[in-house]
Length: 80
Image (cartoon, rainbow, N blue to C red; front, side, top):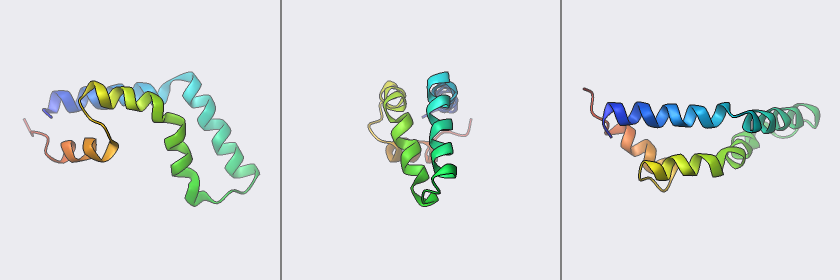
């Protein structure tokens, strides 16, 4: 990834997380962990489930199949 591509990808992902529908689901999820005293160790997995479908569209737009694949590309991103 070039720096410009990496920034575009991050901006697109930020838009996913800012969607009203996603924010509502995340608020409900947070509430369920607080109210039901659910094990916080499972929170990250549940967040993944909420954003997975929308995030996958962004990953595919940039040629990635998985989040780890995207992370690896960031490690190798140009430092222009």
